Amino acid sequence: MQNSYLTQLDQIQEQAIQMAYQQPQEGQWTKEHDKNDCIIYSKLNQVGLKMTRTELKLNVDPKKAMDVIFDMTRRSEFDENFLEGKIVEKIDENNVIYYGAGKSPIVLVDPRDMVALTRRTILKDGTHIVVSKSVQLDSVPNKKNYTRCEIIISAFLIKEITPGTCQVIIIANVDPKGSIPKMLINSGVSMQADAVKKLMEKMRQQTLKV
Image (cartoon, rainbow, N blue to C red):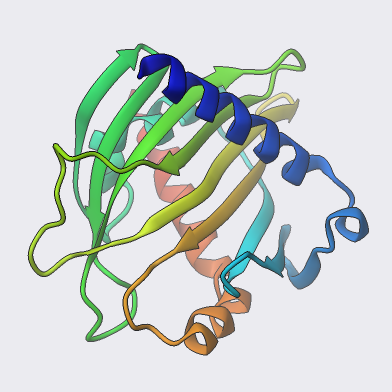
């Protein structure tokens, strides 16, 4: 089973790198936002929901940043919507299955939870990367009052471009499931910039405490 997990992670890592660095026209990305050093591209995924590629710069130590992002048990330290994170299975130091749960940013919508196969690694060019995808485990059944979302692919890529300054690319392709109208989900993409920048700044603050 572990070999299967590692193969899945190899595949989504390759996909994440391709999506992160392809030209917008090549990947058919549409620019939704470009302001204050934050660019958000989107395109429809296989279920008609918008997936996003966010690009911004951050003054952060890339290794410390990835240590914080990779460890879902620490997510609540910088994400006020996150409720719970724990290790389900540790394949090795850099490949872990996590359980996570968080509040929905949409009022009167049930909280979401997930079971995420997650990897961190460093690419040959020095880019630090964390990738995740959902997996189904009988040992982690659905919880009452939670909707189990699907992470089709999630990725954080951080690379130092000048001393103290990093290029951050975030790939998010998630199906929240449940009964939220697609139109409502898709309409919020262009308004994500402030929330993403706030989240990344809180994450950066956590790296200063390490």
